[in-house]
Structure formats: C-alpha cells, structure tokens
Image 1 (cartoon, rainbow, N blue to C red):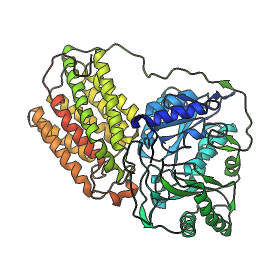
Image 2: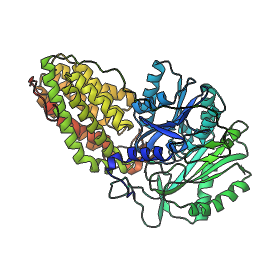
Image 3: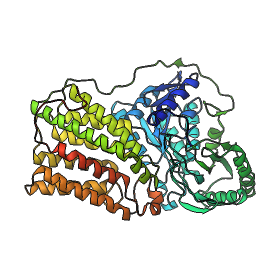
Image 4: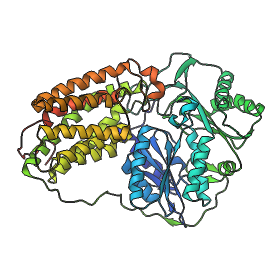
Length: 583
C-alpha cells in the first residue's frame, strides 16, 4: 500500500517535482512533465514517451541520452491532457520534429492526437507511435486493439537510440513501429495495487490464486488461475509469448522480465532461472536481457515477460548506450549542448477581454452554479465511481472526475469574475476539465462543455430550442471524438438517450425544466442498464466478462451530473448577480 503522501490528489505532481529535483543534472520539470536538462547541440528528433503516473521508471525515468527527450506525465493511471502533451513537446522540440510514443489506450490516443494537431498547425513535424504488445488484451486478428504494457520500454529504447544517432523523423517512426510489431508481452498479477489515500487495493485475489493477463493500470488479470510454482509460471509465460512468434522472426531476442512494483528482485531471479533456459533450449540467443522494475503499476505484486525479436536494424539500437536517471547502459558520448532555460509555461492563446450582454452574464451565473453543484455531487460519489471502475478498469474514474470538475469550477468562476458570458464560462470550464483531468473522460467532458458553450454563446440566455441544440452539440462532439455507439458500454449509452429525449420533448413544446427531468430519468435508466452489457471500448474491453453486472462508471457519472445541471441550465433568471464562488 502507498503510505507516503500528503494530499492524495497531488501525489503525482509532488512525485514528479521530487524526481526532477533529485535528478536535476539530467532532467528539468516543465508544464506537463519533464525534458532533458540540456538541449541538443544540433536539431534532433524529440522522442517523447507519455502516459499516466504510477509506472516508474516509466516514463520520466528514461529521459536522457540514448533514450527519451522528454516525458508527458499524467495523473496516476490517467492519460496526460492534450495541453500537457503540447507543452512538453514545445519544450523539447529542437527543429527536427517530435514523436509521441505511448501505450494504446483511448485517452492517450485522443489527447496526444489533439496535441499533434495543434503542433502540426504551428508547422512542427509530429508523429505518433502506439505500443500494442499485450497479447492477452486482444487476439492476433485484432492486434491493433491491443494495449501497451512493458513492451513500451523496448520500443522507446529503439526510438531513442535511433534519434540519438541522427535518424530523421520518418526513420525514427519506422523503426519504432517495427520494434512494436516484433514485441510481445504477457503478465501475471498476484495482488492488486492501492491508490495513495485509498483504503483498499483496486482488486483482490483469493488465497493461492493469480490473475493471468494483467494490465499496468491496476487492472486485474483476464483469467484467475491457481498460483503455480516458479517453474510452472515460467513455462506458462514463455509458452504464451512464443506461441505468438512473429512471422520470419530471427533467433536473437531482447528479453525483459519485469516486476510490477512489489515483486522483489530475488523472486524475479528465481523465475529467470526457468525462463532463460527455456528460451535458449528453443534456439534463441538472449541479447542483453533485463530483469528488474522497468514498467511498474504502483505497488502491484506481479510480473511480466516481454520478448522483442531482433534483426540487424533493431539489435544495435537495443544495445546502444543510454544514460537516464533510472537506466544506464554502456558509455554514452556526450554531445555539447546548451542548458535549457526555465522558460515560462505555455499559457495557450493570449488573454482577451470578454464581451457579453447582461442577459448572458445572468445565465453565466447559473452556469457557474451548475458546475458547482456537479462538483459537490462528484466529491460525494468519488469512492463509488472508483470502485465501479476498478471492476474491469483502472479505478481512476472517480478521482479523474473530481480533478476535472474542480478545475472546471475554478475556471468558470474566474471567467465569470473577468466578465465572461455564458458561452465563455462554459468553454473555460471545459478546457480546464480536459487539461486537469486528463484521460478519456477528461477530454470528452472538456470537449462537450466547450461545444455546449459555443452553442449557447454570449449574447442571450438560451431558449428551449437553443438549449436543445447545445445538448445535441455536446453529444455530437463526444461521439465524434470517442467513436462510441449505444451498446458499447460507455458514457454514450446514457448521453444519447438524454439528448434524444430532451430534444424530442422540446420539439413537442414541453417546458425545458420538465423536459430536462424526463431526459435525466432516461439517462439514469440507460446507465443502470449498462450492467447487462459487455464493454466494446476503452480499458474495460479486455476484461469484458468481469464487468457484467456492474454499470459503466462513465455512463453513471454522466447521468448523475446531468441530473444536477438541469435546474441551473434550464433557469429563466437573467439577473447578473455573482454566483457562489465568484467575486
């Protein structure tokens, strides 16, 4: 259990700050993560690893010569926001382009994708390389759906070495994707991990059992089996990985036996005593194998086996020297560069004066109150939502929603104090939610609130038809980003019934407040009905069977939040009084 913390919600930020202070000779902290202390003497491709916290030494621990140029660091088990990715890229970019590389999780794909669009619009060459090494998370026929786990390390290492050697962006990307195609991982968990401040682990196993096919975000294994001896476990892991040997694979392999957080090195060495001979007996030459903690999951007890099949291109990159805070190999050649200054954080677009009518200011006050009501609700529901998410996911939904709504409430109040109308208040709230919450739900709620605000505008209080259009815009933006449909067991299962019910009632002439109440009831019923569905999207998909009987946490939280927003969003008040929390 994680016992050393102050405010659990600030754990990731405080850990990153401490890490950067300890290793200030190699790294420096920037908004959204960390980058190398010294900029390259000549332009080089910036390889930026990214993902949530809780995986040390991934991701910040591998910043340095021969490895990553920077790391984008989200909250525990939560993808970084698009703003965080953009900020780190701007700090690390030296003129040869950037490549984001990360595990294949929906939130990461969305947020790094949005950051890439922003960088490209500014003329910066940018690419993304996804890691999909976890053979337990999807069958070979659907390998593109697989998640990234400890194979991250091999792919990042290959890309970092290639960039250090002067390869251009296209070549770094090609080699990274080639390494990913040649990498396979299987893992097993013996006990779940515990969030800072939480009273219980994300999952438990019966005495004498293990979970085969774990994730690195605290997810339980895909199949519970009897806990075997070290010899039997080694045989199981090797057999499963070798069963997916890539076509035309060679006989030289990189091997990682990875501890997940609380499995001791001595235990790994015992397991290695079975794994290494099995691989050699299968005709393989083991090239610079690694045994230790390289991609962890807080304090999870567990182990994973990763194999990357090497060739004449990949082997030199795997074996190349590297010097980072957590990982060193060989003797690196230091190329003179300049010490990076502590430049100010990117603040996004320049501040501009708000323009709003008095009527819109009155509705803006109601919007601030609405977000405040959602904040109170979510703080009370945080533990329950986290428990629901831990059944088949990483257990971070409650904490992510709280972080998002806290930031949204503060941003909405600040915008209102600055003279914003309703549209700008909601847009500011959405941007702050996406930035601070990170993850899939963060980017979706942020984008949805912004779309709602853009529809409402800053000139009037919305009538019934405009309010229906705003709800539709919210839903359309989320469907566009998340690509989910009804039946996928996501927030969309509650959102679309709400939007269709509200719009239909308004079209029939219903009073907005009553129409909202009816829609909220439909959303709540639809959210509860997701208990009977198997998830087809997101982190819960690999653990689909375990989620049966539990409603989707994203659909549940959406239905709850929309219910408390209604009395404020459907208000007819146009008074310009400041809401609670604003000055």
